[in-house]
Image (cartoon, rainbow, N blue to C red):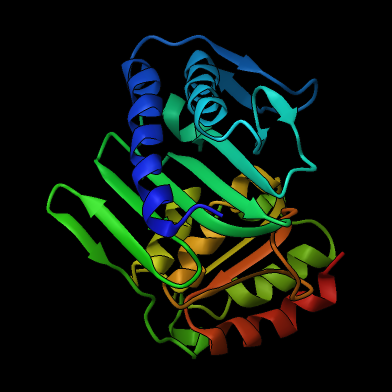
Length: 263
């Protein structure tokens, strides 16, 4: 496996290429396509151009690695190392001109997330992690980041996409947690996870995620001292129902509630 230093340096190249493809379309006139026959799953030329830029660099540098991408399909998924790409996580925010979207670049080894990047080029913040450590690169330089202690659910700040996404038993479990936490914020997409790693937020609960929504974020939160699993306590690598917490004790308490609705 490439070292953390090698991956960090390569990720800078990846982020530079993706931002060059994406930023010209942000807060600009933009055509939006809907990928769903029922519902709304937007995609733009920026999503597609960003992923194309990422894939070209990965294919050139690591041709033996696999790639799982949201917009352009999958190759070599049986490889030991697989890159998992979401060029714009938070396309709804992107088309609204809100800077809460990010480019997600993850790497798995043997199916386990081992390195991740969340890049927000508009505000020039890049969060990275390798499961052992996490760090932030911004205008001020590079510094380590870590989660904060918060074992009490009543004191926790929580983020989620929207409570309307939870159905049936999921909704019951979610409402119990939201009714207990200090406050909840909606529509944060990948930024909610980055704020866990930065010690600003304590909890993120989601459902219906794809691998490219979470693989890049798991090594960042784990590297910062947090925990990310599915609602059964297993690996988050396949997406689905996801819970992330900055404090392992908080994660354990929340998991007791969510496990009743795990699928």
